[in-house]
Length: 335
Image (cartoon, rainbow, N blue to C red; front, top):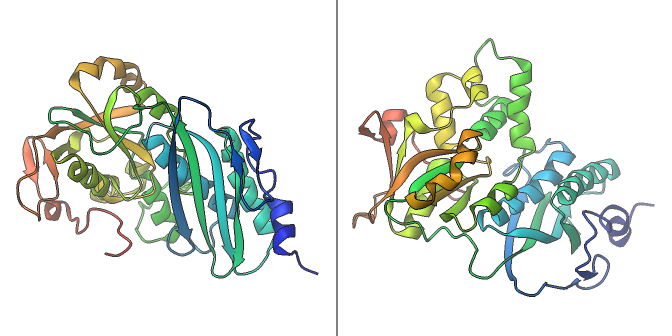
């Protein structure tokens, strides 16, 4: 006899993540009871992942579990918050115990790393998809937003953008790699897609320093456009400043690597602006290679609805996307 819905929950999800003292009642009842510490505001985020859209149909279950939580933790990081509790709604075509063990393991390992406890959710039958909600906390008036960048601010990005998209392209063979591609380099890019690492520690260092922030999930250009529009200004990105990925350079021709850096999604790095007066505070992070200044914030957008809000420059000259062979700035579910 197969597992019932309630057996499934009890076996795979009752003890997922870190056990927290602020959870009065967790998995197993009609609702969770949580104790919010005084002097904090709540930050709530939610993401849905659909098989064949957000991850390959044959993706490793451990990766699916990891990514389901990671994409939400990245949103929490973009707000400068600390994650605490998670809810998981899982739709399965059928019950595969090995798949569920691996999935729960991937989810739980990342949850424990960041002291998150799974406190509830739902399971149902249907096409494979999952929705995760994460609740975090932040002291009043300290949350980072995407609408508060100012003209004159410097623009930064964390990590190496484009690597996750490069990994997915190698995994699905949608782009031709260099013939001499090293297998360890190939594997490192695929792992960047399968196991993204949310920038929670960096985000806490940016609280009180960054004027605006957001995570990069749909591609650097696409998400930069969102930040520009939300803040009502333009962003200048200097291509020669983009942090160069050695793995991308080894894997693809230069034009392809540039395209991936600008339009590839699933990096879950942070894009943020900083007032010039706080620039010195970032020097340790810059010297360690954790973050890179890639441009600056310019005055408000022209009254032109077709203007994207982002300008690309190379060696003092402004470029059009078409000059780089780019047709679309990033991922869009409905494009």
